[in-house]
Image (cartoon, rainbow, N blue to C red):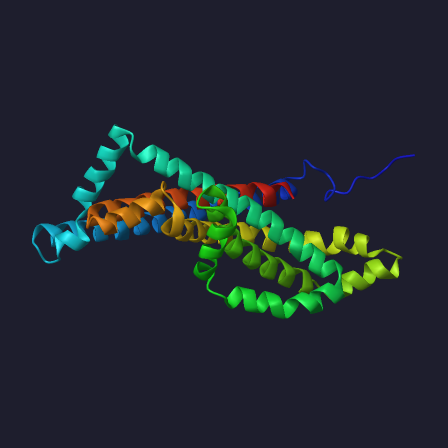
Amino acid sequence: MSVRVSSHDNPDNPRRTDSREWLQSLYRDYQHRKRRSRRVVLFTQLSILLSLILLWEIAGRLKWIDVLIFSYPSKVFAQIWKDVLSGDLWPHLGTTVLETAAGFLLGTLVGTLLAVLIWWSPFLSKVLDPYMVVFNSMPKVALGPIFIVLFGGGFTAIVMTTLSITVIITTLVVNSSFNEVDPNLVKVVRTFGGSRRDVFRKVILPASFPAIVSTLKVNVGMAWVGVIVGEFLVAKEGLGYLIIYGFQVFNFTLVLSSLVIIAVAATGMYQLVVYIERRLIRER
Protein backbone atom coordinates (compact mmCIF):
# COMPACT_ATOMS: atom_id res chain seq x y z
CA MET A 1 0.00 0.00 0.00
CA SER A 2 1.57 3.28 -1.08
CA VAL A 3 1.03 6.55 0.75
CA ARG A 4 1.03 9.78 -1.19
CA VAL A 5 2.77 12.66 0.50
CA SER A 6 1.35 16.04 -0.39
CA SER A 7 3.84 18.59 -1.61
CA HIS A 8 2.48 20.97 1.02
CA ASP A 9 3.34 18.50 3.81
CA ASN A 10 6.85 17.87 2.55
CA PRO A 11 9.35 19.79 4.74
CA ASP A 12 11.71 19.93 1.75
CA ASN A 13 9.10 21.67 -0.38
CA PRO A 14 10.79 24.78 -1.88
CA ARG A 15 7.63 26.83 -1.50
CA ARG A 16 7.40 26.02 2.21
CA THR A 17 11.09 26.74 2.69
CA ASP A 18 10.71 30.12 1.00
CA SER A 19 7.77 31.00 3.27
CA ARG A 20 9.78 30.10 6.37
CA GLU A 21 12.72 32.19 5.25
CA TRP A 22 10.40 35.10 4.43
CA LEU A 23 8.87 34.99 7.93
CA GLN A 24 12.32 34.79 9.52
CA SER A 25 13.40 37.77 7.46
CA LEU A 26 10.37 39.76 8.61
CA TYR A 27 11.10 38.84 12.21
CA ARG A 28 14.76 39.91 11.89
CA ASP A 29 13.68 43.23 10.39
CA TYR A 30 11.24 43.75 13.24
CA GLN A 31 13.92 43.01 15.84
CA HIS A 32 16.32 45.36 14.08
CA ARG A 33 13.76 48.19 14.07
CA LYS A 34 12.96 47.51 17.71
CA ARG A 35 16.63 47.68 18.75
CA ARG A 36 17.11 50.82 16.67
CA SER A 37 14.08 52.48 18.28
CA ARG A 38 15.40 51.55 21.72
CA ARG A 39 18.79 53.09 20.93
CA VAL A 40 17.15 56.28 19.64
CA VAL A 41 15.05 56.58 22.81
CA LEU A 42 18.10 56.01 25.02
CA PHE A 43 20.15 58.54 23.05
CA THR A 44 17.37 61.13 23.37
CA GLN A 45 17.04 60.52 27.10
CA LEU A 46 20.78 60.90 27.67
CA SER A 47 20.90 63.99 25.46
CA ILE A 48 18.17 65.68 27.49
CA LEU A 49 19.87 64.75 30.76
CA LEU A 50 23.32 65.94 29.67
CA SER A 51 21.85 69.16 28.23
CA LEU A 52 20.14 69.95 31.52
CA ILE A 53 23.32 69.23 33.48
CA LEU A 54 25.35 71.42 31.12
CA LEU A 55 22.81 74.25 31.35
CA TRP A 56 22.82 73.97 35.13
CA GLU A 57 26.64 74.10 35.19
CA ILE A 58 26.75 77.16 32.91
CA ALA A 59 24.02 78.92 34.92
CA GLY A 60 25.97 78.33 38.12
CA ARG A 61 29.33 79.38 36.70
CA LEU A 62 27.92 82.57 35.17
CA LYS A 63 25.91 83.41 38.31
CA TRP A 64 22.57 83.19 36.54
CA ILE A 65 21.33 81.33 39.63
CA ASP A 66 22.15 81.61 43.31
CA VAL A 67 24.86 78.96 43.74
CA LEU A 68 24.44 79.06 47.51
CA ILE A 69 20.99 77.52 47.07
CA PHE A 70 21.16 75.69 43.74
CA SER A 71 24.89 74.89 43.62
CA TYR A 72 26.07 73.38 40.27
CA PRO A 73 26.88 69.87 38.98
CA SER A 74 30.67 69.87 39.27
CA LYS A 75 30.38 70.97 42.89
CA VAL A 76 27.72 68.36 43.62
CA PHE A 77 29.75 65.55 42.04
CA ALA A 78 32.84 66.72 43.92
CA GLN A 79 30.85 66.42 47.15
CA ILE A 80 29.75 62.90 46.24
CA TRP A 81 33.29 61.86 45.29
CA LYS A 82 34.68 63.26 48.54
CA ASP A 83 32.09 61.34 50.60
CA VAL A 84 32.80 58.15 48.63
CA LEU A 85 36.55 58.37 49.21
CA SER A 86 36.19 59.27 52.89
CA GLY A 87 33.71 56.46 53.47
CA ASP A 88 31.11 58.81 54.99
CA LEU A 89 28.57 57.97 52.30
CA TRP A 90 28.38 54.19 52.66
CA PRO A 91 26.73 53.90 56.11
CA HIS A 92 24.02 56.37 55.09
CA LEU A 93 23.46 54.74 51.70
CA GLY A 94 23.42 51.22 53.17
CA THR A 95 20.91 52.21 55.86
CA THR A 96 18.51 53.83 53.39
CA VAL A 97 18.74 50.99 50.85
CA LEU A 98 18.12 48.38 53.57
CA GLU A 99 15.08 50.26 54.89
CA THR A 100 13.74 50.73 51.38
CA ALA A 101 14.20 47.07 50.45
CA ALA A 102 12.47 45.96 53.66
CA GLY A 103 9.56 48.34 53.14
CA PHE A 104 9.27 47.40 49.47
CA LEU A 105 9.26 43.63 49.99
CA LEU A 106 7.06 43.61 53.08
CA GLY A 107 4.65 46.14 51.58
CA THR A 108 4.22 44.11 48.40
CA LEU A 109 3.81 40.82 50.28
CA VAL A 110 1.42 42.09 52.96
CA GLY A 111 -0.59 44.16 50.47
CA THR A 112 -1.02 41.20 48.10
CA LEU A 113 -2.04 38.86 50.92
CA LEU A 114 -4.53 41.44 52.20
CA ALA A 115 -5.98 41.79 48.68
CA VAL A 116 -6.39 38.01 48.48
CA LEU A 117 -8.14 37.97 51.85
CA ILE A 118 -10.51 40.76 50.79
CA TRP A 119 -11.34 38.99 47.51
CA TRP A 120 -11.87 35.70 49.31
CA SER A 121 -14.44 37.19 51.69
CA PRO A 122 -17.05 39.48 50.06
CA PHE A 123 -18.30 40.35 53.56
CA LEU A 124 -14.83 41.49 54.62
CA SER A 125 -14.50 43.46 51.38
CA LYS A 126 -17.68 45.41 52.12
CA VAL A 127 -16.63 46.05 55.72
CA LEU A 128 -13.08 47.25 54.92
CA ASP A 129 -13.85 49.28 51.78
CA PRO A 130 -14.62 52.66 53.50
CA TYR A 131 -11.70 52.25 55.89
CA MET A 132 -9.29 51.62 53.03
CA VAL A 133 -10.53 54.71 51.19
CA VAL A 134 -10.09 56.87 54.29
CA PHE A 135 -6.66 55.44 55.10
CA ASN A 136 -5.48 55.93 51.51
CA SER A 137 -6.50 59.61 51.57
CA MET A 138 -4.83 60.21 54.93
CA PRO A 139 -1.44 62.03 54.80
CA LYS A 140 1.05 59.37 55.81
CA VAL A 141 3.47 61.95 57.24
CA ALA A 142 0.94 62.51 60.02
CA LEU A 143 1.31 58.86 61.05
CA GLY A 144 5.09 59.18 61.47
CA PRO A 145 5.03 60.57 65.03
CA ILE A 146 2.61 57.80 66.06
CA PHE A 147 5.00 55.15 64.75
CA ILE A 148 7.89 56.85 66.54
CA VAL A 149 6.02 56.70 69.86
CA LEU A 150 5.00 53.07 69.30
CA PHE A 151 8.25 51.64 67.92
CA GLY A 152 10.90 54.16 68.96
CA GLY A 153 13.14 56.23 66.77
CA GLY A 154 14.88 53.77 64.49
CA PHE A 155 14.64 51.14 61.78
CA THR A 156 11.22 49.78 62.78
CA ALA A 157 9.49 53.17 62.84
CA ILE A 158 10.86 54.06 59.40
CA VAL A 159 9.81 50.71 57.89
CA MET A 160 6.33 51.08 59.41
CA THR A 161 6.05 54.55 57.85
CA THR A 162 6.97 52.97 54.51
CA LEU A 163 4.46 50.15 54.97
CA SER A 164 1.69 52.68 55.61
CA ILE A 165 2.21 53.80 52.01
CA THR A 166 3.11 50.62 50.14
CA VAL A 167 0.59 48.23 51.74
CA ILE A 168 -2.51 50.29 50.95
CA ILE A 169 -1.39 51.00 47.37
CA THR A 170 -0.66 47.31 46.73
CA THR A 171 -3.95 46.22 48.28
CA LEU A 172 -6.05 48.62 46.21
CA VAL A 173 -4.31 47.87 42.89
CA VAL A 174 -4.22 44.08 43.28
CA ASN A 175 -7.78 43.85 44.64
CA SER A 176 -8.98 45.98 41.72
CA SER A 177 -7.26 43.62 39.26
CA PHE A 178 -8.93 40.64 40.98
CA ASN A 179 -12.36 42.21 40.54
CA GLU A 180 -11.76 43.09 36.88
CA VAL A 181 -11.16 39.49 35.78
CA ASP A 182 -13.62 38.34 33.10
CA PRO A 183 -16.61 36.86 35.01
CA ASN A 184 -17.26 34.42 32.17
CA LEU A 185 -14.00 32.65 32.99
CA VAL A 186 -15.12 32.33 36.59
CA LYS A 187 -18.47 30.90 35.45
CA VAL A 188 -16.71 28.25 33.37
CA VAL A 189 -14.77 26.98 36.39
CA ARG A 190 -17.90 27.11 38.53
CA THR A 191 -19.86 25.19 35.90
CA PHE A 192 -17.39 22.31 36.08
CA GLY A 193 -17.74 22.18 39.87
CA GLY A 194 -14.69 24.23 40.78
CA SER A 195 -14.43 25.60 44.31
CA ARG A 196 -13.53 29.18 45.21
CA ARG A 197 -9.97 27.99 45.67
CA ASP A 198 -9.97 26.57 42.13
CA VAL A 199 -11.35 29.84 40.77
CA PHE A 200 -8.59 31.79 42.46
CA ARG A 201 -5.78 29.41 41.50
CA LYS A 202 -6.82 28.79 37.87
CA VAL A 203 -8.48 32.09 36.88
CA ILE A 204 -8.01 35.05 39.23
CA LEU A 205 -4.32 34.70 40.04
CA PRO A 206 -3.08 33.97 36.48
CA ALA A 207 -5.20 36.78 35.02
CA SER A 208 -3.97 39.25 37.66
CA PHE A 209 -0.32 38.29 37.45
CA PRO A 210 0.66 41.23 35.17
CA ALA A 211 -1.02 43.69 37.56
CA ILE A 212 0.75 42.17 40.56
CA VAL A 213 4.12 42.42 38.82
CA SER A 214 3.39 46.00 37.71
CA THR A 215 2.62 46.87 41.33
CA LEU A 216 6.26 46.11 42.11
CA LYS A 217 7.32 49.06 39.93
CA VAL A 218 4.86 51.37 41.65
CA ASN A 219 6.05 50.24 45.07
CA VAL A 220 9.67 51.08 44.29
CA GLY A 221 8.88 54.79 44.23
CA MET A 222 6.45 54.55 47.13
CA ALA A 223 9.03 52.74 49.27
CA TRP A 224 11.64 55.44 48.66
CA VAL A 225 9.12 58.16 49.54
CA GLY A 226 8.17 56.38 52.75
CA VAL A 227 11.76 55.82 53.84
CA ILE A 228 12.90 59.38 53.15
CA VAL A 229 9.86 60.79 54.99
CA GLY A 230 10.60 58.48 57.92
CA GLU A 231 14.25 59.54 57.98
CA PHE A 232 13.20 63.19 57.91
CA LEU A 233 11.29 62.62 61.14
CA VAL A 234 13.47 60.37 63.21
CA ALA A 235 16.66 59.02 61.62
CA LYS A 236 20.19 59.67 62.78
CA GLU A 237 21.61 57.95 59.73
CA GLY A 238 20.56 57.68 56.10
CA LEU A 239 20.19 59.83 53.00
CA GLY A 240 17.08 61.49 54.40
CA TYR A 241 19.06 62.45 57.47
CA LEU A 242 21.77 63.97 55.26
CA ILE A 243 19.16 66.12 53.50
CA ILE A 244 17.79 67.44 56.80
CA TYR A 245 21.33 67.99 58.14
CA GLY A 246 22.27 69.87 54.96
CA PHE A 247 19.28 72.18 55.39
CA GLN A 248 20.16 72.79 59.03
CA VAL A 249 23.76 73.82 58.29
CA PHE A 250 22.76 75.60 55.05
CA ASN A 251 24.87 73.22 52.94
CA PHE A 252 22.68 72.86 49.88
CA THR A 253 25.42 71.08 47.94
CA LEU A 254 25.10 68.24 50.45
CA VAL A 255 21.32 68.33 50.00
CA LEU A 256 21.53 68.13 46.22
CA SER A 257 24.23 65.45 46.28
CA SER A 258 21.98 63.33 48.52
CA LEU A 259 19.10 63.83 46.08
CA VAL A 260 21.33 62.74 43.17
CA ILE A 261 22.34 59.59 45.05
CA ILE A 262 18.68 58.84 45.84
CA ALA A 263 17.79 59.27 42.16
CA VAL A 264 20.57 56.92 41.03
CA ALA A 265 19.77 54.28 43.68
CA ALA A 266 16.02 54.44 42.98
CA THR A 267 16.65 54.12 39.23
CA GLY A 268 18.87 51.10 39.79
CA MET A 269 16.26 49.47 42.00
CA TYR A 270 13.54 50.21 39.45
CA GLN A 271 15.57 48.68 36.61
CA LEU A 272 16.16 45.58 38.75
CA VAL A 273 12.40 45.22 39.22
CA VAL A 274 11.84 45.70 35.46
CA TYR A 275 14.39 42.93 34.78
CA ILE A 276 12.65 40.60 37.23
CA GLU A 277 9.29 41.44 35.65
CA ARG A 278 10.58 40.51 32.18
CA ARG A 279 12.01 37.23 33.43
CA LEU A 280 8.80 36.27 35.23
CA ILE A 281 6.58 37.12 32.25
CA ARG A 282 8.94 35.29 29.87
CA GLU A 283 8.85 32.16 32.04
CA ARG A 284 5.05 32.16 31.94
